[in-house]
Image (tube, rainbow, N blue to C red; front, side):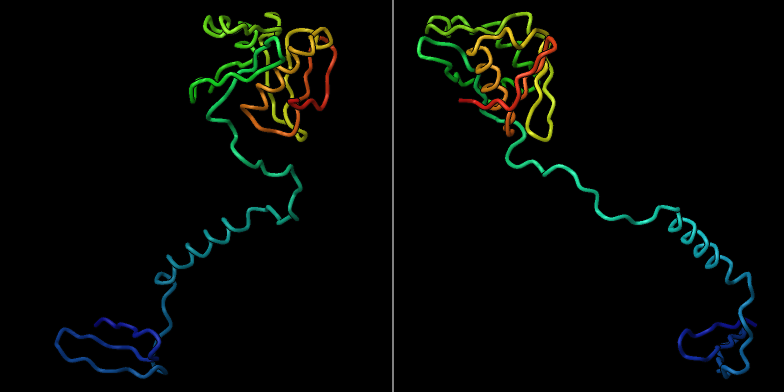
Length: 185
């Protein structure tokens, strides 16, 4: 004889080998054997262990403001020196992604750009360079002394880097010196 419990009804159903079913009052029910509760107890124990990992909740941890706007400009420009100052020259979309733009500035303009009278003042020994995002904007570390750079070279680097990765300002570092909080003018 098998006994099936009807959940929530307070009754148990006896099923015999025949088609007849009779109701057994709740008062005559036997408690479930431990082996029937075993899987439920295992799940409960596993949930207790997983939720009690020892990490306690904390207050929110303050950090930097979330960046706004695009992370990288999709229509970048390199800034070159002309007779009238530092000028942006657009590059094809996506052409500067992953490139060391300071290295490109040090190499100089293309032949067509040179024919237009454009040059560079970024020295070749400025590379390799690194660009890191910081709270105030970007830190650009050059392989040369930044105190020896011309004003045009500083503007070339600052404007190009800020044109590709918009940030508050640029800090140029190198050769034991730094130029802080520079913006493209």
